[in-house]
Length: 82
Image (cartoon, helix red, strand yellow):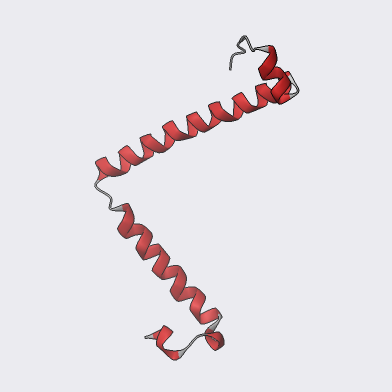
């Protein structure tokens, strides 16, 4: 990890109230950028592997619902179990 030095206007410092607040915001933005890059790489790998993530998500959603509805059986109408 490296430390960088940047110029910031007095108006920007006044708006945030503290140079540390600006540094924290920039660190969060950079972290978000890194997460975005990782998400794009994962998406690309899933596509290249030929995985239909929408189908996988639907199967997981259905399995979760099937498991949950039996926990609240007394609160659901009978047609929920068809």
